[in-house]
Image (cartoon, rainbow, N blue to C red; front, side):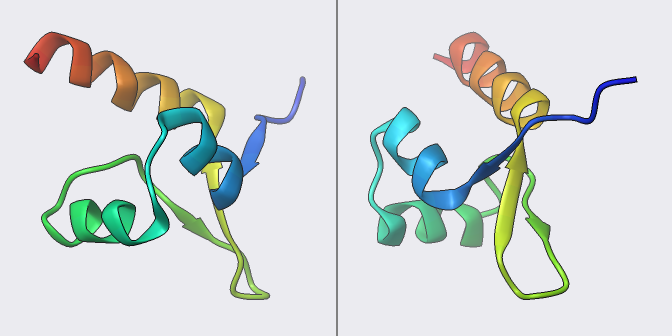
Length: 61
C-alpha cells in the first residue's frame, strides 16, 4: 500500500497562490485544508486533504 503524499506548507501555498499570512488568517477562521504537525514541529498537508478542500471551494463558489 502506497503512503499518502505529504506536501510541505510552501508547496501548498504555491499551489493555491496564497501568502503564508493569508493562509493562517483563513485557518484562524476555521477554513483551509487539514494540517498535520510532525513531531519536529513542521507542518504537512496530505495531497488527498488538499484536493478535497479545493473541491469544496469549487462547490461553494
